[in-house]
Amino acid sequence: MKDSDIEFQFATVYEFVDTVIRPLYAVSGNRIREVAWSKMWWSHREAMFRLHFLWQRYEAQRIAEPATFGETWLRIHGDYHMRYLMQEGGVFFDCKHREQDSVPLPTTPMEVG
View 1 (spheres, one colour):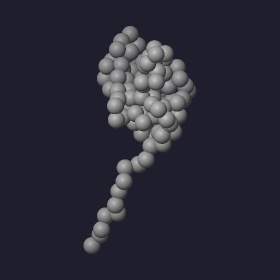
View 2 (cartoon, one colour):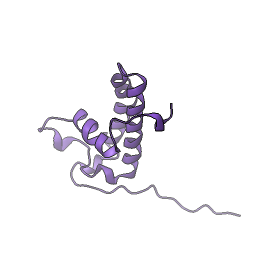
View 3 (tube, helix red, strand yellow):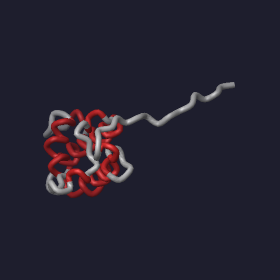
């Protein structure tokens, strides 16, 4: 089955994050300031890459295994990537206190010759 054959539940990654990710990984009001999350999550390219493919995998598994996709998706995909995004030192870690833009890894042009 190709992605183009799947009838998506969510039209965009933005709708998926607002409907699935944000409520699913919610925390108590007392802990919200401790959570590494960005209100501007969509402005972080590395986060968007992961969230886009989390959405795609969610949709594919929802069709392929409707009775059990949630557990599989959480265990293998959702928790893995969300932990990476939200962990200490992760993509959103510096956004806990103040929104921070991500900066690409530095590089030096390779010398040819």
